[in-house]
Image 1: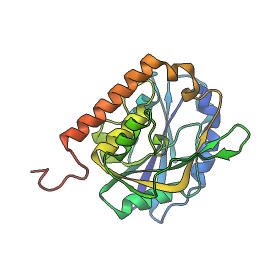
Image 2: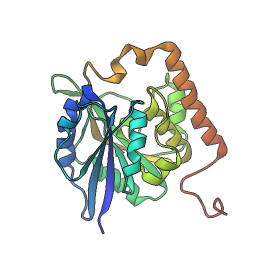
Image 3: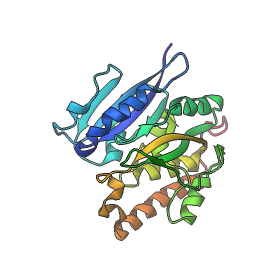
Length: 256
């Protein structure tokens, strides 16, 4: 029986032109025998500007819906997630060679690991790449480690939420991405870290495109009032989950 990894991508009109590059990086992934991917591309909106950029491939499902931000688009896309694992791929980013296979191997090897992340390289406008210091050690990420680091380093995590690979049932149990105008992926990452062990791969797993239209480069993203509110609710959710002592996977005593 074929098993599936679901790739989830939120897209809006300005980023649609990068979908072909994302697709090329996905097609280049090599998976173990018996595995395949299904790419769910969800437009944040209902324009006529994204559809022309959707690759013609039976493994791709394209959807549209009213605007609510990338977190809403990704969460809506989960309705079609017919696989055991979900991988995030933003429309303007590209997977590094071998990324899917490494993520899959980490979670298949240990049922107690709920999610994985990997090293990121910035993809600059001239086509060059650049790394940055601060990555954790290769291997397991213990519950609470990302939250503690994030809180102590001006709300910057040591692993990147754009590289998330996660068990579908765990993702759904946490409600998908947070209903925020930004930092929705960081909110999910910290929630995951509050309830489950993770994994970090020191091999580059993502090329993170830097361009003039990316959401994190806009002035609204760094507005102090909004940023403080986003960080407050992200942290409150993660600490509440941590205090409830709910853990993945559940032990037999937890289910009684």
